[in-house]
Amino acid sequence: MSKNIFVGLSGGVDSSLSAALLRDKGYNVSGVYMKNWSQDLPGMKCPWQQDYTDAKRVAVQLGIPFFMYDFEKEYRHLVVDYMLNAYKSGLTPNPDIMCNQEIKFGLFLATALRNNADYIATGHYARVIKSKNGNIESYGLYEAVDKDKDQSYFLYRINRELLPKVIMPIGELSSKKVVRKLASDYKLVTADKKDSQGICFVGEVGIKDFLQATLGTQKPGKVLDQNGRVVGEHEGAIFYTIGQRHGLKLGGGLPYYVTFKNMDKNEVYVTTDLGDRHLWSHDINITSLHWLVDDIKLRQTADNLSVRARYRATKVPCSLTIKHQSATLKLQTEIRAVTPGQSAVIYQGEQVLGGGIIC
Image (cartoon, rainbow, N blue to C red):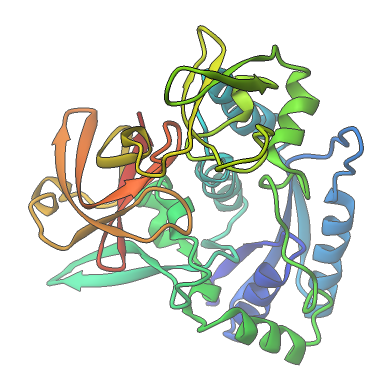
């Protein structure tokens, strides 16, 4: 008997093609639109209605059932509140990682399974690969074939016990060009739709605009350079992140880079020296550890580990030392702008072992 797959249809081309490919493999496919955010912000219209319409049109084209799951209340609490509290604490969180953990591979997966799904599928650029050792099967999360579009960094916090229930068809394709070509061959209405940017589900809105709209005007404060000299005034320390160069509004001359924030004093520290020791790190300390393998204690001794300290950053060879609920990563090469609140994701080759929040 054919297996039931619920595909998270976001209204974009990647999830649309995922549904088409799985349908043609003989699965019983249903499309699900997750309504997670519908609030318009000042000057910024939420695109959820258009995305919902596009997802529904794709389902009609493919001749598959279509549903909407309303997770708006949970999304606000589990993702948006988490993000806002982190920013208010001086951190730079990654809401997309939390959205994947709590919503797409949390609530969506659990709800789909309760509604007789055997699997869920998404349009992520990553792969879930099954391996076998004797009679024991295991599932691992791996980078996508297309390394330029790979999204495995955002997925390291999903529940490893549920990986057998997850399918990511797009991760096997060689490029975005191939994705759009296949979508065009299927005549999907989303084939030429522009990829979404900005915060997960919220729409085309920058993080600073979102914070200003939700938290309001912030108290200004001093900006000090590497010599302790006041060089300007900031608009609120929460808006700045380590390594930031653009948007500082500090006048001409050499470019400034943010090196530190003192939330108690409401001060932002910057430097014009790209070699400033505050900008570079040989070690990364992480907490809130999450592992996708059960033999991480053995793997920490491996000599082919690497870490990605932010999305699209180059993976850097590292060693790993686990200490209870925290870990230290010693890097083979210094990296710039290690940012508290972001995630450090650990790989062994193409496989994601897990990671944690930079502290």
